[in-house]
Each structure stands twice: as C-alpha cells, then as structure tokens.
Image (cartoon, rainbow, N blue to C red; front, side, top):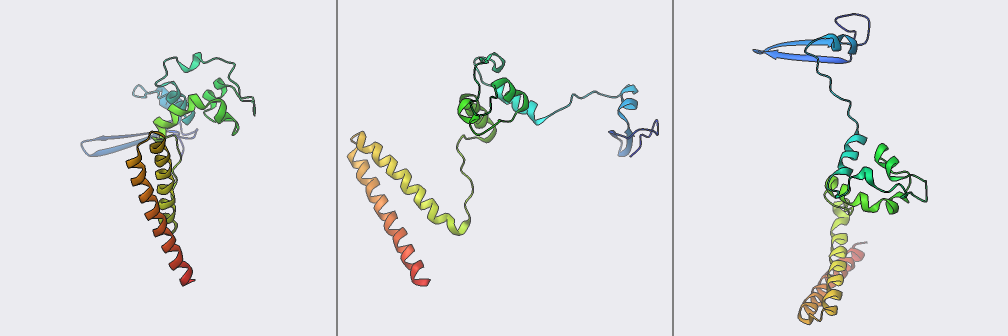
Length: 176
C-alpha cells in the first residue's frame, strides 16, 4: 500500500480513528507520519527485550552486574551475550546459566519442569506409572523418617495400583 500523503513510499504506519461511529483510516509512510502532530513514536519491541526484562526481575543484584567470568564451556557464550540475544548458544548453556534461568522459566512458564502432554490412549498407563514412582519416592522418605504407618499405607497403595496395571495388561494381551 502506498502512502496516502506523499504517494511515493510504502505505507508502514496505519491510523484508525473512530469518532461518533465514523471510522477514518489513514495509511502513511514513516516519514510522513513523523511530520504529523498526532503521531506518537512507539519504541520498537522484540521478544529478546521481553526476555531480557524477565531476567532482571526478582534479582537482588541486577543482571547487568553479573560477573563476566560466567561463560559456557560448550559455545563460549557469556551471560551478557545470552541476555542480549535472548537465546542460548548450545545445550551446555543450561548448566552454566541455570541459576539465572530458573526464576525466568518459573515466571514465564509457571514451572521449571517440563510436563508435556500425553495421548489419551497411552495416558492412563503413563499416569499410573508416574503415580507409582511418586508413591515409591514418598515411601522411601517415610521409611527414612521412620513413619512406618504412612509407609505401610503407601506400600499397600503401590501394590494395589501395580496389580490393577498387571490385570489391565493381561486383558490387553488376551485381546491381541
């Protein structure tokens, strides 16, 4: 679309004004838009700037004061480069910038652990396995803390769920 004012350059700024249900549109090039009084200059926005802003939140010490010695051994990227481009250089960067990434990921995604999605057909079996693993870890902690009644409850839950899973597998094998 060509600028409606100079009729030479490409229109990159688009005004839409609605007054008393009357809509007026104006398509201008950047130069013509800057010459108008009602033009508001909005700074450019990038996702890297957004991520950099997240990295500065919640730090006792501002991110720009981080020691420059923190460098990734895999790609040589330092924290300043990472903050500037908003992208890690390699998989090793997660180890070297982990302490800076944890709060950022928690704020952006709500968690630092990937949960993913599971297809509905396979989901029930995976959820049961995950529940069993969780209960086994809890059982281990209960035994270490000598909470034997809780440990017995967990042991029984694990056995019952494992038996249920084995029965399901047996029926599935019969159908095959």
